[in-house]
Amino acid sequence: MLEEIKKILKKILPSFIFRFVASYRYGFFGPYKSWEEAKKKSSGYDSELILNKVKNSLLKVKRGEAMFERDSVVFEKTEYGWPLLSILLFIASKNVNKLSVLDFGGSLGSTYFQNKFFLDQLLGLKWNIVEQPNFTACGKEYFSDEHLSFYSSIKECLEKDFPSAIIFSSVIEYLEKPYEVLKEVMDSNFQYVIFDRTTFLQKGDDMITLQKVPPQVYDASYPCWFLNEDKLINFLSSKYDLILDFKSLGGEIKQHNIKGEYKGLFFKLRQ
Image (tube, rainbow, N blue to C red; front, side, top):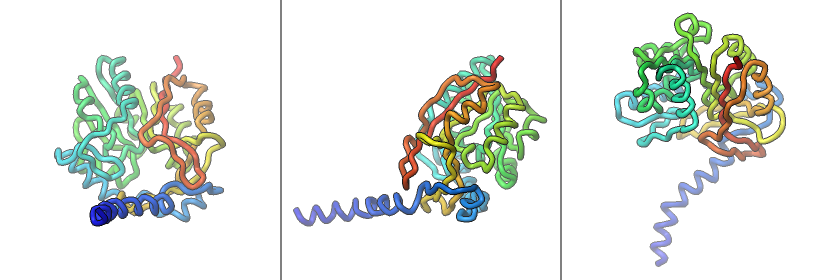
């Protein structure tokens, strides 16, 4: 009996110890007084290491060797974000089963490939991604096709296509000046604005944190906002109506005295 207990402990203790250590060493830390202060303590997310890990993972998805990728990690079974997918199909239903979106900060097509099985059923699809220059160049070389296009700015995308919807999936909180980008979105008159997997505080004003990524994903750290949900809604309310709010993959966040949650918001341009 004692030997059996030892065997069980050998199996579970390493995993338990890692999770215990990870809960202190990784995750969200803060608050910080300024973006610059948090940035000085970070490694950033524009490194070639991150790009190459994401590229190699998504190439496996594209070749059918994995089901989908998130944050460079590949999965054998797709984990759908049903609210976002439902919203995309709803928008397509309003446009004779055709969909054109701008996926801001959409990596090399993570959300596109995650939902490709359903998106392929549409009569027409244009998935435009706006990204950092190194991701844009990589996307054009390895992933561009008749459905998937890459651009370096919203303006560049709108010169070629005019998507009815713009998506921010785990993105807006990683921008130094999120409200300046949202002002550009409002000025561009997208019919729909979608937020998914966005970090909101449970209470309090916008907060700047530092996110340290566990090394099994990739070795990186970067500044991250926890936004005040009401403030963001009020900012958009002069032109947009909130249609839906929903809980996103990731759930609640309770780390190092930071209490928040991953949520999504769906807005429609007021007529």
